[in-house]
Amino acid sequence: MKRIVELTINGEPRDMTVETCCSLLDALRDDVGLTGTKKGCDVGDCGACTVIVDGQPVNACLMLAVEAEGRTVETIEGLQPGVDVLHPLQDAFMRHGASQCGFCTPGILMMAKKLLDDNPRPTDEDIRFGLSGNICRCTGYTKIFDAIKSAALEMEAARS
Amino acid sequence: MRRFDYHRADTLEQASRLLTDLGDDTFLFNGGTDLLVEIRERLRRVRNVVDIKGIPGLSDIIYDETRGLTFGALVTVGRLERLALVRERYPNLRDALASLGSIQVRNRATVVGNVCRASPSADTIPPLIADGAFIHIYSRTNMRVVPLAEFFTGPGKTVLAKGEIVTGITVPPAGDNSGKAYIKHGRRKAMELSTVGVAVSLSMDDGVCSDIRIALGAVGATVLRAPAAEAMLRGTRLDAATVKSAADKAMEECTPISNVRASADYRRDMVGVLTGRAINQALEASA
Image (cartoon, rainbow over all chains, first blue to last red; front, side):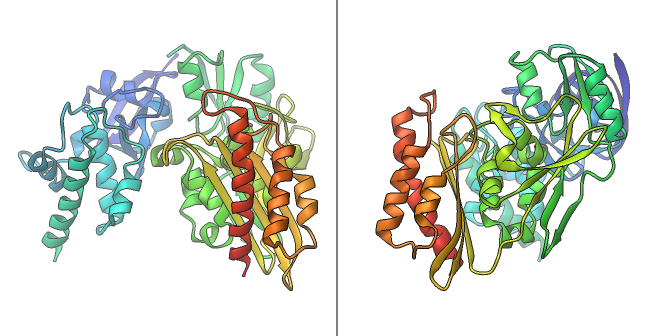
């Protein structure tokens, strides 16, 4: 059984035609064509598919596409503030080499964005707690941690 | 993913009818963080899911000094975890909520779902049982309220009949001079199922323990109370020697199995260690 789901993705109204058993993750990747959101484990363990739905980060693999009806979804493709302009987190990840194979990076960036939106001055523990649902199989956690810390400071400086 | 049909209910009655009328392999769909995994890993055969998230009135969180905290079936783990009220008055539940899955999972998973899944290792169950929580159950003919300690009949099994739906949970308020603790023991800090979980809620009256409940997770077919250990502690000043013998008694009262996460012997030993530790933590919090 297929349904049409109307929602807002990265600020734009969109519709997706999906099977009712299709996950939001598969719908984003296969129907909408937004393949920046990655499928790691597909069972909610790895965090690679993290997207922000109505302001809260969730695993897109653990949500049905039909449940996104009327909701606002933010994906990695919407993180950039403009064409050829990087989000400070993306910039910091590049400078710190906080991406090895890159597969976990979109999910970690979305999680980090939510963390800094809510808590512009996170403690080291806040950052570690905030990323506890995102697994990096290259184990590049130190550089990821450093990049988020540095982005937080830069964003703070830019505000003042 | 294996195919299934999706039904959205607008009322409890409609959800209940769908659950009974659509036949076997029809499951209630709430947060979905367990059900979708079970479907994908082919652990559960599912033909229909009945989404209850559109039913009004199940998202409320109410607190009052006499009845305590009542939250609806749709309240997510994350929403409850972030409430100042829960942090202040139900720190045991708060610790359990914050240790469940990941932030992403907690934003979808519901507390009622965690309870209804009836896993012996579910994090939210021990503190809720230690606090004397009640569960509200809807059926098309009547509503009933069941003490949470009597809700579970086995791993994954509850007293719920076909077509019955849990609408919420009430946790009584903490009295004066009460203290609570929940200690989760796992191999890692995040994204972990508990190897052993121990919750203790107690009340002190002039230095004497007037009431205590101990709930043990992941060491039996359901979350267990430790009534003999509790009886040894009631009416005492919770001195070190009494706490030690009660913790030893709790080791006798649990019925752990060996599985991929730990051996039965290890679990039993940890019940001894953590029960003592949780009693002391709750005692300190009561001061």
